[in-house]
Length: 456
Image (cartoon, rainbow, N blue to C red; front, top):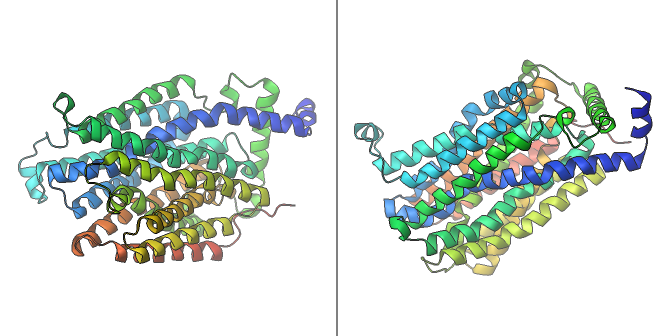
């Protein structure tokens, strides 16, 4: 590193200005990317309110179909992230977004594709089989997006600054629901029958298009790393590169691995995959079923907009919580208790849902606790694996933890669907089961060995 870079690096004003500059250029754009990503992933929760009746889907069919997304996601997650590291973020993230936008819009044809004997082999109707196939393909196409972004942020921010940045980026999960819930409800309610299409068909068509558009913008606007950023000067580029190099070097005492095998030979990676699984099980179970849970609080079966507006409450509060939670974790330098504590907040909400029945206000409070706890969890969790992995090990390790963890996205919705089908529509047993899984995740987190350096 040259002398000028060292002098500039010693200036707190320059450090703050440089990282603020990076954040202001990257985070809003990545935020938009994640909003459209998450909207396409979970809008099936709203479509279910109408689609299930039209296509005669039981709760078990919906729960399995919603969750099978994560099987395709799991299979292709690690290869996708390794490819991203090799070919660059710009090309690969653009490919991911464009392909998933096309598949998302294709859900409008769920009732129009005929499989014949192929569907019969799996004891499915044509529409049921199409639903499963498209959900699986959506997972295949989206695989690598989230861990790719987490990896991408390690190119720009050292670990001491990354949790707050990740939390800001991941507020897109909450905001996509805050925005998407009323929009989805309005589309289904007011576009029903327009142009000969049902409301849920319009929902999939209209909400898939933004992903394709934003994907094209990624190809044009997103730099692969600091050295390719036209909005940074040479000093800033060198400073950021040096900070990231120092951060990587600082992982040595934690057993840093660079290679592919290093990710899979470190038992902490496997433990963290189990922890992430426990949080994701709860998050997607509630996310995919929240519209149904809210509708059952006494909302008219055709008032989809009201369901959307009520859904904004838990997600809006959780957006504020996850940013403040991530900021507090960065300020204190503490990670494990923030991860475990957020899981326990989710547990409190799940227990509340199991106890309050269909009482509207207590149920909304409980849903807010679950949403806040699980979002606080995902915003702080990624500070743990990125603290001791770098290079190809980081690409593979992050993708592995995310892919194994996201299998919880299959089991969570499927668990609620099967229990509701067996119990005549009751969900209480599922809430208790989900709470127990989250407790296990919190305990493993607190028992983990050191995954971060002590701050001086």
